[in-house]
Structure formats: C-alpha cells, structure tokens
Amino acid sequence: MYAIVDISGKQFKVEKNKFIYTDKIVPKSGKKVEFDNVLFISDKGKTKIGKPVIKGSKVTGEILDQVKDDKVLVFKKKRRKGYKVKNGHRQQLTKILIKEIK
Image (cartoon, rainbow, N blue to C red; front, side, top):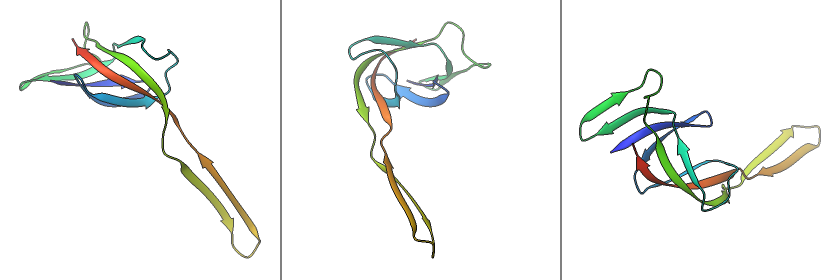
C-alpha cells in the first residue's frame, strides 16, 4: 500500500514504515504529524484518485530528526575579469517515519 501526499507544495510517494525527507517542518523530534492532502492511494491493485484530494483520508507519521542535506556548491565566474565567487548551501530537512495510511 502506498499513497501520494502533498507536503508543503511538493508531492511524495509514501509507504508504511518507510522514511521520507521533506523540507524543514517546525515541530520537534518525537512529535506526531498528520497530512490530509492525500492525492492518490493504491492498495493491492485498488486505486483511489482525489479530485484534487481524497476526502476523509490522511497519512500519519512521526518526526524523527532535523537533518541537513548534502552540500551544494555555487560557483560564479566571469572570464578574463578576475571575478570568482564560491559559496555553499546545505538545505535543512526533516526526517519522517510514516506510521499509517488511512
């Protein structure tokens, strides 16, 4: 069984007892979260498609940790001008364990 859920403007395929990494969500570790923007559910060949969401369905999970993604290097250069700038960025993510799909 899996579902497609809209979490803060992005769509994620979620399955029970699997981890997902989303953009940072404010609650601390150990808190339970519910996502009610369920767009699609598939269970043993039976599918439900929302228009745009499935009413009465939700996905529950538990926030495990606040982590950082891999570093992305941003390098700018203008040739023959002596201009070089090197910056880095690490996106903050939230690790969520999916507990239940209703």
